[in-house]
Image 1 (cartoon, one colour):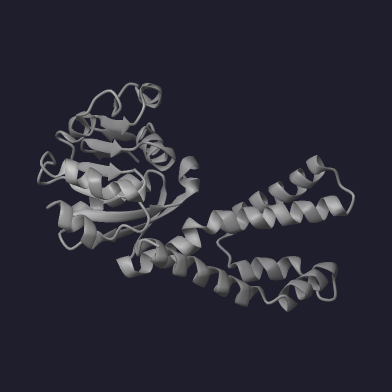
Image 2: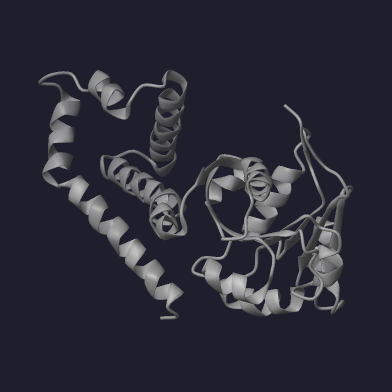
Length: 276
Protein backbone atom coordinates (compact mmCIF):
# COMPACT_ATOMS: atom_id res chain seq x y z
CA UNK A 1 0.00 0.00 0.00
CA UNK A 2 1.43 3.38 -1.01
CA UNK A 3 1.52 6.43 1.24
CA UNK A 4 1.81 10.06 0.16
CA UNK A 5 2.99 12.62 2.71
CA UNK A 6 3.52 16.40 2.61
CA UNK A 7 6.96 18.05 3.04
CA UNK A 8 8.73 16.90 6.22
CA UNK A 9 11.68 18.30 8.17
CA UNK A 10 13.78 16.29 10.64
CA UNK A 11 15.94 18.48 12.85
CA UNK A 12 18.66 16.36 14.40
CA UNK A 13 18.79 13.27 12.19
CA UNK A 14 20.78 11.14 14.62
CA UNK A 15 19.92 7.55 15.53
CA UNK A 16 16.18 8.00 15.99
CA UNK A 17 15.77 10.82 13.50
CA UNK A 18 17.81 8.74 11.07
CA UNK A 19 15.53 5.74 11.62
CA UNK A 20 12.49 7.88 10.82
CA UNK A 21 14.25 9.16 7.71
CA UNK A 22 14.94 5.62 6.50
CA UNK A 23 11.29 4.71 7.02
CA UNK A 24 10.23 7.69 4.93
CA UNK A 25 12.60 6.58 2.17
CA UNK A 26 10.84 3.21 1.77
CA UNK A 27 9.70 2.58 -1.83
CA UNK A 28 6.01 2.68 -0.90
CA UNK A 29 6.32 6.14 0.71
CA UNK A 30 6.26 9.35 -1.31
CA UNK A 31 7.03 12.66 0.39
CA UNK A 32 5.79 15.44 -1.87
CA UNK A 33 8.13 18.41 -1.69
CA UNK A 34 10.88 16.26 -0.23
CA UNK A 35 12.48 15.69 3.15
CA UNK A 36 14.79 18.25 4.74
CA UNK A 37 17.15 17.22 7.53
CA UNK A 38 19.72 18.94 9.71
CA UNK A 39 22.74 17.73 11.61
CA UNK A 40 25.45 19.58 13.45
CA UNK A 41 28.43 18.65 11.28
CA UNK A 42 29.13 18.79 7.55
CA UNK A 43 30.25 15.16 7.60
CA UNK A 44 26.95 13.90 9.03
CA UNK A 45 24.92 16.18 6.78
CA UNK A 46 26.76 15.04 3.65
CA UNK A 47 26.14 11.38 4.50
CA UNK A 48 22.38 11.95 4.41
CA UNK A 49 22.24 13.94 1.18
CA UNK A 50 20.48 11.86 -1.49
CA UNK A 51 17.61 11.97 -3.93
CA UNK A 52 14.55 13.30 -2.15
CA UNK A 53 16.57 14.48 0.86
CA UNK A 54 18.07 17.94 1.34
CA UNK A 55 20.58 17.92 4.16
CA UNK A 56 21.96 20.94 6.04
CA UNK A 57 24.76 21.33 8.61
CA UNK A 58 24.16 23.78 11.44
CA UNK A 59 27.89 24.29 12.08
CA UNK A 60 28.38 25.92 8.67
CA UNK A 61 24.92 27.36 8.07
CA UNK A 62 23.35 29.30 10.95
CA UNK A 63 20.03 29.30 9.06
CA UNK A 64 20.03 25.54 8.51
CA UNK A 65 17.03 24.81 10.73
CA UNK A 66 15.04 27.69 9.26
CA UNK A 67 15.80 26.45 5.74
CA UNK A 68 14.73 22.94 6.68
CA UNK A 69 11.34 23.92 8.11
CA UNK A 70 10.49 26.36 5.31
CA UNK A 71 7.23 25.00 3.87
CA UNK A 72 7.36 21.82 5.97
CA UNK A 73 3.98 20.45 7.03
CA UNK A 74 5.46 18.23 9.75
CA UNK A 75 8.62 18.92 11.75
CA UNK A 76 10.31 16.20 13.81
CA UNK A 77 12.57 17.40 16.63
CA UNK A 78 15.32 14.80 17.04
CA UNK A 79 17.71 16.77 19.25
CA UNK A 80 18.56 15.93 22.87
CA UNK A 81 16.01 16.96 25.54
CA UNK A 82 18.17 19.84 26.80
CA UNK A 83 18.16 21.34 23.29
CA UNK A 84 14.41 21.31 22.64
CA UNK A 85 13.53 24.64 24.27
CA UNK A 86 16.26 26.60 22.46
CA UNK A 87 15.38 24.94 19.16
CA UNK A 88 11.70 25.84 19.52
CA UNK A 89 12.59 29.45 20.33
CA UNK A 90 14.68 29.52 17.15
CA UNK A 91 11.86 28.04 15.08
CA UNK A 92 8.95 30.05 16.46
CA UNK A 93 9.33 33.00 14.02
CA UNK A 94 9.80 30.81 10.91
CA UNK A 95 7.44 27.84 11.33
CA UNK A 96 4.46 27.66 9.02
CA UNK A 97 1.40 28.25 11.26
CA UNK A 98 -0.08 24.95 10.07
CA UNK A 99 3.10 22.93 10.64
CA UNK A 100 2.77 20.03 13.08
CA UNK A 101 5.69 19.75 15.50
CA UNK A 102 6.62 16.35 16.94
CA UNK A 103 9.32 15.88 19.57
CA UNK A 104 10.99 12.53 20.19
CA UNK A 105 12.84 13.86 23.25
CA UNK A 106 12.12 12.22 26.58
CA UNK A 107 10.95 14.36 29.47
CA UNK A 108 10.00 17.56 27.61
CA UNK A 109 6.31 18.07 28.33
CA UNK A 110 3.68 19.18 25.84
CA UNK A 111 2.82 22.23 27.94
CA UNK A 112 6.45 23.38 27.77
CA UNK A 113 6.48 23.13 23.98
CA UNK A 114 3.12 24.85 23.64
CA UNK A 115 4.48 27.82 25.57
CA UNK A 116 7.29 28.23 23.04
CA UNK A 117 5.47 27.84 19.69
CA UNK A 118 1.86 28.47 18.62
CA UNK A 119 1.76 25.31 16.51
CA UNK A 120 0.08 21.97 17.23
CA UNK A 121 2.64 19.82 19.07
CA UNK A 122 2.92 16.12 19.86
CA UNK A 123 5.33 13.92 21.75
CA UNK A 124 6.50 10.65 20.23
CA UNK A 125 8.31 7.87 22.07
CA UNK A 126 9.72 5.42 19.49
CA UNK A 127 12.00 2.51 20.41
CA UNK A 128 15.20 1.29 18.78
CA UNK A 129 13.65 -1.51 16.64
CA UNK A 130 12.36 1.41 14.57
CA UNK A 131 15.78 1.13 12.92
CA UNK A 132 14.54 -2.07 11.26
CA UNK A 133 10.95 -0.82 10.85
CA UNK A 134 9.70 -3.02 13.70
CA UNK A 135 9.37 -0.28 16.28
CA UNK A 136 6.65 0.72 18.69
CA UNK A 137 5.93 4.44 19.02
CA UNK A 138 3.79 6.03 21.69
CA UNK A 139 2.17 9.24 20.44
CA UNK A 140 0.65 11.93 22.68
CA UNK A 141 -1.13 14.99 21.32
CA UNK A 142 -1.16 18.52 22.67
CA UNK A 143 -4.25 20.67 23.11
CA UNK A 144 -4.07 22.25 19.62
CA UNK A 145 -3.76 19.01 17.65
CA UNK A 146 -6.63 18.28 15.26
CA UNK A 147 -7.64 14.83 14.02
CA UNK A 148 -5.91 15.64 10.73
CA UNK A 149 -2.71 16.63 12.53
CA UNK A 150 -2.75 13.46 14.62
CA UNK A 151 -3.37 11.31 11.54
CA UNK A 152 -0.39 12.88 9.77
CA UNK A 153 1.93 12.26 12.72
CA UNK A 154 0.67 8.69 13.05
CA UNK A 155 1.31 8.05 9.33
CA UNK A 156 4.92 9.18 9.65
CA UNK A 157 5.69 6.91 12.59
CA UNK A 158 3.84 3.98 11.05
CA UNK A 159 6.64 4.04 8.47
CA UNK A 160 8.91 2.56 11.18
CA UNK A 161 6.48 0.22 12.98
CA UNK A 162 3.33 0.27 15.13
CA UNK A 163 1.87 3.38 16.76
CA UNK A 164 -0.11 3.63 19.99
CA UNK A 165 -1.97 6.84 20.77
CA UNK A 166 -1.81 7.45 24.53
CA UNK A 167 -2.44 10.41 26.85
CA UNK A 168 0.74 12.14 27.96
CA UNK A 169 0.40 10.88 31.52
CA UNK A 170 0.85 7.33 30.19
CA UNK A 171 3.87 8.10 28.04
CA UNK A 172 6.42 7.41 30.78
CA UNK A 173 4.80 4.04 31.46
CA UNK A 174 4.82 3.20 27.75
CA UNK A 175 8.48 4.13 27.61
CA UNK A 176 9.20 1.82 30.55
CA UNK A 177 7.63 -1.08 28.64
CA UNK A 178 8.39 -0.60 24.93
CA UNK A 179 11.03 2.15 25.04
CA UNK A 180 13.27 0.32 27.50
CA UNK A 181 11.89 -3.10 26.54
CA UNK A 182 14.59 -3.99 24.00
CA UNK A 183 17.18 -3.67 26.78
CA UNK A 184 15.26 -6.19 28.89
CA UNK A 185 15.25 -8.64 25.99
CA UNK A 186 18.97 -8.16 25.38
CA UNK A 187 19.63 -8.75 29.09
CA UNK A 188 17.78 -12.07 28.92
CA UNK A 189 19.74 -13.03 25.81
CA UNK A 190 23.02 -12.12 27.54
CA UNK A 191 22.18 -14.23 30.58
CA UNK A 192 20.97 -17.25 28.63
CA UNK A 193 24.09 -17.16 26.44
CA UNK A 194 26.25 -17.01 29.58
CA UNK A 195 24.36 -19.96 31.07
CA UNK A 196 24.89 -21.91 27.84
CA UNK A 197 28.64 -21.22 27.91
CA UNK A 198 28.74 -22.34 31.54
CA UNK A 199 27.33 -25.67 30.29
CA UNK A 200 30.33 -26.12 28.01
CA UNK A 201 29.12 -24.64 24.72
CA UNK A 202 31.35 -22.29 22.75
CA UNK A 203 30.41 -18.61 22.47
CA UNK A 204 29.45 -19.17 18.83
CA UNK A 205 27.27 -22.16 19.68
CA UNK A 206 25.62 -20.27 22.54
CA UNK A 207 24.85 -17.32 20.26
CA UNK A 208 23.32 -19.57 17.61
CA UNK A 209 21.13 -21.42 20.10
CA UNK A 210 19.94 -18.42 22.07
CA UNK A 211 19.52 -15.76 19.39
CA UNK A 212 17.79 -18.06 16.93
CA UNK A 213 15.54 -19.33 19.73
CA UNK A 214 14.48 -15.78 20.65
CA UNK A 215 13.92 -14.86 17.01
CA UNK A 216 12.04 -18.08 16.29
CA UNK A 217 9.87 -17.77 19.39
CA UNK A 218 8.78 -14.20 18.57
CA UNK A 219 8.18 -15.06 14.91
CA UNK A 220 6.07 -18.05 15.98
CA UNK A 221 4.10 -15.82 18.36
CA UNK A 222 3.41 -13.37 15.53
CA UNK A 223 2.61 -16.06 12.96
CA UNK A 224 0.18 -18.08 15.07
CA UNK A 225 -1.59 -15.24 16.87
CA UNK A 226 -1.76 -17.44 19.96
CA UNK A 227 -1.29 -16.13 23.48
CA UNK A 228 2.22 -16.50 24.98
CA UNK A 229 0.78 -18.57 27.82
CA UNK A 230 -0.66 -21.10 25.35
CA UNK A 231 2.56 -21.38 23.36
CA UNK A 232 4.47 -21.84 26.62
CA UNK A 233 2.05 -24.61 27.63
CA UNK A 234 2.75 -26.44 24.38
CA UNK A 235 6.47 -26.53 25.18
CA UNK A 236 5.96 -27.47 28.83
CA UNK A 237 5.16 -31.19 29.05
CA UNK A 238 3.80 -32.37 32.42
CA UNK A 239 6.63 -33.68 34.61
CA UNK A 240 9.11 -32.81 31.87
CA UNK A 241 12.37 -30.87 31.78
CA UNK A 242 10.85 -27.52 30.76
CA UNK A 243 8.36 -27.73 33.63
CA UNK A 244 11.25 -28.05 36.06
CA UNK A 245 13.06 -25.05 34.57
CA UNK A 246 9.91 -22.91 34.59
CA UNK A 247 9.27 -23.81 38.23
CA UNK A 248 12.70 -22.42 39.18
CA UNK A 249 11.99 -19.16 37.34
CA UNK A 250 8.54 -18.82 38.92
CA UNK A 251 10.07 -19.21 42.38
CA UNK A 252 12.24 -16.21 41.51
CA UNK A 253 8.98 -14.20 41.28
CA UNK A 254 9.47 -12.72 37.82
CA UNK A 255 6.13 -10.92 38.04
CA UNK A 256 7.23 -8.90 41.06
CA UNK A 257 10.65 -8.25 39.51
CA UNK A 258 9.11 -6.81 36.34
CA UNK A 259 6.67 -4.69 38.36
CA UNK A 260 9.57 -3.24 40.34
CA UNK A 261 11.68 -2.70 37.22
CA UNK A 262 8.96 -0.78 35.39
CA UNK A 263 8.18 1.28 38.49
CA UNK A 264 11.86 2.26 38.74
CA UNK A 265 11.94 3.32 35.08
CA UNK A 266 8.77 5.40 35.45
CA UNK A 267 10.09 7.02 38.61
CA UNK A 268 13.32 7.99 36.86
CA UNK A 269 11.39 9.46 33.91
CA UNK A 270 9.61 11.76 36.35
CA UNK A 271 12.91 12.82 37.85
CA UNK A 272 14.34 13.60 34.41
CA UNK A 273 11.28 15.70 33.55
CA UNK A 274 11.83 17.60 36.79
CA UNK A 275 15.44 18.31 35.82
CA UNK A 276 17.03 15.96 38.35
